[in-house]
Image (cartoon, rainbow, N blue to C red):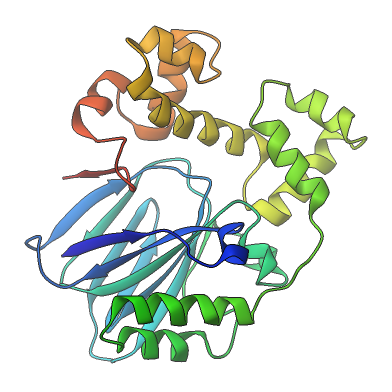
Length: 268
């Protein structure tokens, strides 16, 4: 299968959508298996003419006799997700930034219970629209139609306090200090953050530091320097946290993946 990545073009959508990737039939032989590692992005994936099964730390895509489109949401995982494709597929994934999907879907917390949602249908016409987009022959037309569709669902709701909390979590202050800064209890901070982001502040910060380490890796000389640059207390703390998210020692992890790629996948 072939995978191509694209950045968001529309100025409004750029604030909320990190980009897209299109998977098309051809290229890699089948079956395909890879590990996808924790992220603070919110993934909305539409798959054509396939059956998608989401289980404990695993997503399996198999052939389906029923032709059509299924759309799924993945927002919360703190361990590697194993992805298995048993047939070539056409697939479109939209990568929403933290809080981004809230600008388009009301009552988003209803979908956050398990960290994923099968048959994600926040709009009655979503799968119908995605079916039309899959059938367009030109990639530029596909992206333009995709962005026009999501723009039609845009709601300019006020989330300033949550945005400030997200910014604070990406800095060095403690979560207790963040709750005091915003004059709310630690418990209430956890409640509202999970409601809008789909994970706890502790989970968010842990994943943020992991993802920052992937970006910083090319700028440092060793894991000790990387641990401090990426806001870990020391190298032992870095290794412990890293292994808890990847199940792999960081030195082995960086030998087997390319952190410069748009998606950090480990093929099996």
